[in-house]
Length: 343
Image (cartoon, rainbow, N blue to C red; front, side):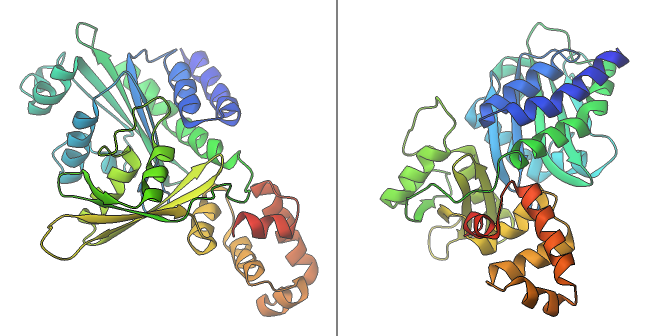
């Protein structure tokens, strides 16, 4: 089986680079992982690497929206046996629960959430690469199927980092380009019951754009990313931010807890991500070094190369070398393309 793991390791990078949409990525990673860890459904979430807010989401034949939200709330409250915070932070990247094990026979979550949804066994994988948490993956098996085994968990542990690297590569494979979104910023108010109580017309359009392909666009329902921002704003005591990469540009979601009689209501602002919010995230996704990021900050101020060199106590040649590395990593060809991509 070692050869199979190595083959999957090699395939993941190519699959991530070739994927066009987030659902494409989810299916590709599921197919490759399914060669040694068969499963009936999956949920893949990508995280903003700076604050672990949800920024990508796709799923296939898995939990309902209501069950997914309950699991996220339980995870945040420490009620899950294998919370993702622990999986991405610790050495054990994989956690398995299932009715096949005696210690889970009386699991409240399994009996109240998984079994009613039609699943007997679940595997969670924390996706960490280069000490950064990039996301999480949940695999499920239907009732009547054998539970995930210890051997399969070991294979998943081996592939956790390559899966995380593939998720990062999917985003970094898209060149940094100006946003093609012409929508004005929108604001949606999310009530304590996680329903949209009011929204600007542009917010409704933004939420339709963020909704997974093929899903119904119920105006009162929220996409996973918008719900996550509202949830994080409540947890963080006031505010939360996510930068969402798409093929048409980056989108920023900012959640802010409202004051007043509506306890738990959150205002979510959705807009094309401005450069001041985008630069920190882009630096991590594209592997920009600390010195390269400093040069990018100077470029964003419109300074010429000679001025940047003097301010940073570098030679113009060294500044140009940094710029060439930045262009290569972000897929741009010039200073002008870099500036417009971060505008």
